[in-house]
Every structure is written in structure tokens, then in C-alpha cells.
Image (cartoon, rainbow, N blue to C red):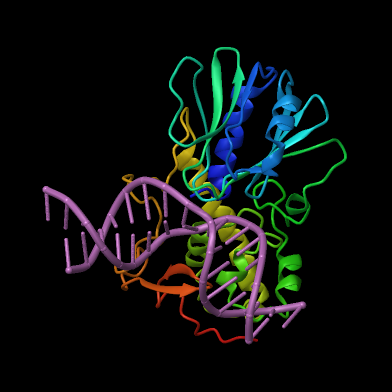
Length: 274
DNA sequence: AACGGAACCTGAAAGC
DNA sequence: TGCTTTCAGGTTCCGT
């Protein structure tokens, strides 16, 4: 599902498809994706004829800056995706928005409707965007700063990794993989990590994101976790399989309602808190 | 304030 | 085979 790497691929595609072109048509079928829902006709009117000046990404959010000064924010939720198709073609399943440029339609599809589209005017802010912490890919993570912000957090490091105000763009998959790379027990309290461990974790977050992005990069957007595709991850979704490092059987636990897979040996908490 | 859990959704996969 | 149940995660909301 869309975490930082997938959102980044979506943003790159949007840049490629929409850059310097004007919207000749805008379709916004009613759905809860558009917020607020009642604004559909106004949003359509404000988008029509506009040109995209830039596509930004922070964490799991995408922002299309328009020549009018407006900005269209897009969050992909669990199943959102921007795709391109000919304007003459049939609508794709679960199409929630379509931006037409020349002979192509750039459409947002989202079966489960967890995603979101929101238009903001010049000078208006989206609180969720403002609340995002540093983005591991574009800003990089400062280990000392992270260490300070983990102090006093009693929740597990796995749960805290999903906090977008601390690690913008990290989701369940990247968080799970990063902890494996860093050899940290996901059950450890966030505050208990040593400076060396936070440094390893910061490094690992960068590594797993870069690694996933590499697999997805190419002419086509490939969601690496798509159904039917082979699992590209080292531990995520591999409970019961041997650890790729030490062959110990990988375990699955639930933290904050989310599954975590880890190696009970490589990620053992033998290095006690301090 | 911080935490846990439910809710929001649908499709794929697993279970029976 | 085909029906039923479970699971999947990002975010928000609500109760403790």
C-alpha cells in the first residue's frame, strides 16, 4: 500500500504527465474522497483551464501547485493511485477524479476510498501537511534530533515509527523493514533506544526506502506490494519463514493494531534499555 | 496527555 | 466448487 516510496512514484508520474499542461477537462464524480464533499462543482471550476506549476511530496502527501495559486492536495490512503489513460477509453474501475490534458486523462482511482483530495487557495494551509515531520528522502533524518524527540515516549518504537510528525512517510511496511535492518526489537520502548541504535534506525529507514524505490522505479509505476506480485521484502509478510540473516523462524506480532514481523534472534532485546 | 481500539472501505486470500 | 471469514493497512475519532 502506498507508503513513501509508492507516493514518490505517483508524484514523479504526475510531474511527467501534467507538467506545463493545462486541464482541458475535470471530472469529479461524487465520493467521500473529495473534501469537503459539497465543493465538487466549485473545485471543478477552479481546476478547469489551470496549469500545473509543480508537484511536491511530503511524507505520504502530494501537492499539485497550480498557476492560479491554488493547490490540490492528494493523499492515497490505502488503495489510491494516479493512473493515465486515453480520454477516449472507458473509465477505470473506482475512478474518483479525472484531469484531462490534451488527449490523455490523468485519473485518481481508489477502491476503498481511504484517500483524499482537497483544494486549498493561495495562502490557505492544510493542517495535515503542516504537521508532517522531516521527510526521510527529501529532508533526511537527524539522529540527534530524533533521539531527543523519542525521549519520554513509552510506546513501542514500532508504533512511534508510524508517527507522521516524526517520520513523515514511514508506514507499516517500511517501519517493519527498517527495524529488521537496524536489528532492533520492535517491542522496545521508543525512549529506551540508545544513540547508537537511533543512528542505526535512521540509516535503516533511508536504506529500506531507497531499496523499495529502486524496485519500483522504471517506465511504469509498479506497486511493489501489489496482489499477485512476488513479495520483495526481507521480513514483511514473511512470518514463519526463515530469517534471511540467521534462518531463525520469523515471528508475527500485533502492535497498535498493525502486524509486525521480526526475527526474534537478530532483533533480540538483549541490549537492555538505558 | 497518552494510549487502545473501533471505524471507515473493498478485494484478495484463506478457511471450510 | 462456492460460500464465509479473515486480513490488509492510513488516518481519524472516541472513550478511558
